[in-house]
Each structure stands twice: as structure tokens, then as C-alpha cells.
Amino acid sequence: MVCRRYYPNKTNTIMKAKIKEGDINLFAVAPGVWGLKDVFVNIYAIQNSTDNSWVLVDAGLKWSAPKIRRMAETLFGANSRPSAIILTHGHFDHVGSLAKLSEEWDVQVYAHHLEMPYLTGISSYPAPDPTVGGGLMAEMAFLYPRGPINIEDRIITLPNDGSIPGLPEWKFIHTPGHAPGHISLFRESDKVLISGDAFVTTVQESAFHVMLQTKKLSGPPKYFTCDWLSAARSVDKLAALEPEVVATGHGRPMRGETMRKSLHNLAQNFEKLAEPRQGRYLHSPALTDDTGVLYVPPKNINVTTFPILKILGVSAALLLTVLLFNKKKKQKRKELKNDMRKVRKEGKDNARDKRDKFEDKYKKTLEVKPQKLEQYKEKAKDTWREAKETTDQAKARINKLKEPVKEKYIELKEPVKAKLKDLKEPLKDKVRKFEHLKFALKNRR
Image (cartoon, rainbow, N blue to C red):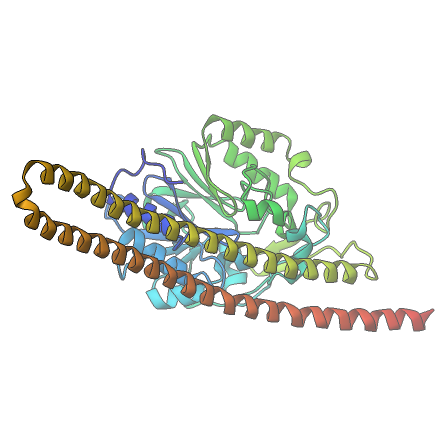
């Protein structure tokens, strides 16, 4: 996961250790650029090579703050904080921990001026569209928050010249379509592109692809894209940069010639490869300006069937959450058993080797110098004591391995219960509304 040719230093060693421990899902992108995956969204940290300060790009989900703090500590040291937070856009999965972290770190947040209504409490985004198809992530879109949040005491508009505060080597590019004020970040010196959700490197509409992090260069997430013509122009603009490395809001980084060919193919065949076959915004985009949303096209789905789709989607989401949790728990348990088995075998092998070596030496000594028998008996006792200490150490390591798994289980158990509880209430409300609608339609007949 970590590219050693980019990071042969201490920071890389620390980062690799953290990944191995499963503490946080951290990955390297390019020199001075790292990413953090939380559930299905990526957050990035970029170091300023001139003064070693750093900038956070996006703020993930509501529960991402502890992981972002651990990322900062792992990469930049304890009590480290960014010089600024840059937003690619303000959708819920990119600003979830923004208010908490910006207040805690006392840092300014920068975004495009067309994103300001959604970050200062003025306007909500156009409604997400669950009719675009492609999988469970799209069908669940009616559950996704669309804002706004209000951080007007922290937010500042990005400069008009394309420069990024705190990152002199980088520039931002306005790439609307997925969101009105969406931006991408580009470093010309080595052609590193952080595209946000202008395009992504997995099939974000499919829960299966999101869970496996399947690598596939795709258009912006369909369920939240409200202007497909602008989205196509944005991908054209980014393909023209001929990037060497791309890191996106969803999916793993991609690089090299194969990636560039896929990006150009996406730009040239955007209508076929990226646009949905149906959808609320497909032929009529939402109209927005710097005051927020001016117009959204009407829904294009039968109201009598859509609640059923919602109910099925929520049920499937609950089932998927339980299955994922059980799968992770079994995997952790299996890893623990393997580690315990290795430690136990290592302790036994060490003790056996020491015993066998000493027995051979002891027998030879008895044959050659019987007078040293007592001396070797004492050595035998010492060796057995060492073997016992080795076994005790193995047991201690086993006990040490058990504790983190117990803590992780306890840590995961409550959030999942809470999430299931949070999902049940909206489901009950939707079923109630469906029953009222069904009753109203029956009476109308």
C-alpha cells in the first residue's frame, strides 16, 4: 500500500506500522501527500515543502474526527494541527467533522465562493437522486443529508487567482457539476491531481464495489451530481492536465499511462460511461448561484412505488451493515488466533532447540569429562529456567494481543447498535407515510 520509492524515511516507517496494526487506514499518494480512508470516503493531508506545515483537504464523516487526529499525529507528530482546511465541496461526507476540527484546531476553512451558501446555513444542496441506478449506494441516496452546515465564523473564499493558502506549489481548478463550487487541486511539478468527486476511482453507486474498493475510473457519484453538462466539461478540463497521479474522494489512487488512457476515455465518452440512463437532473440541471439553489427539476418517479424502493433500500442497508460488522469481527478473531498460534509455536520451538542443543553438549561432556557432571547440571537448570521464561513471555504476548481485540470489539459494538437504531426510526416513518399515502389513494378511488 505504501510506495517506498516515494517515502524511504521515518514518516513512512511509522505510517506503514500504523497500517499494519489496523489503527487507521492510511495510504501514500505522492511525495508529501497522504490519504485516509474512512468507510467509503477519502480525506487528504498535504505537506508544504517550504516550511513543513500541512493542510487538510476535506473532513470526512461525522465520526471521522478521531481518525483524522490520529493521521495528523502519525504523519506530523503529537499535537500537530494544519495551517488550513481546504474543501473540495460541501457534501455531507466531506464536511462531517469540519465544525469540530476547525474549532478544536482554531484554523480557517477555504472553499469556492459558489459553495458558500451550503457552508453558512443559507441553502441546502439540490436533493440527491436515488433513481439514477447502479446499486445500493444510489438507492439509499434519499437518506443522505444535504445540508446546509453553518461555519460562517471560520469559512473564507478561495482567491480568484487559483492559489491555495498554505500550499504555494499547488493551484485549485473550479470543476463544477457534482456540486456548484466543486474544486480540484493540482501540483504542476509532478502532476499530482486531487480531483475530489469530479471523477472517482471506484463505482460509487454500488455498495459491493465500495466495500471491495474495486479500482475503476468512473464519473462523479451519480446520485449527488446535479449538472451533467458541467460535470462533463470538468472531466475534460482535468484530463487535459495529463496527470501522473490521481487521488479522488472515493476509491484508491491511480497513476501512470493506464490511468491517463482511462481518464481520456471517460472524457471522450462521458455521456456513455458516466451519465445515468435516467435521473432527475439528466436532462434538466439544478440552477444555482452564489445565493444557493434557484431551481430544481421535478421528481421523475411514480410516488406510489418509490416508498417501496426506499423501504427495500433501507432494509438492505441494515442487512449489509450487520454482515459487514460480522465479517470484520470474524476476520479480526481469525487474525488473533493466527498470531497467538505463531507466538505459541515460536516459544515452544525456542525452548525445544535450547533443550536439544544442551542435551547433545551434555552427552558429549559426560563421555569426555565425567568430572564436570555437576557443573553441567547447573547449566541444565539455568537453561530450563530460560526456556520457562521464554514460555512465560509467549503467554504474556498472547495476553497482550487479546486486549486490543476486546477493546476494538467494544468500540465497534456500540456505534453499530447506534447506527442500526438511527436507521430504524426513519424506516418506521417512511412505512407510516407509505400507509397514509396508500390509504389516501384507496379513498380517492
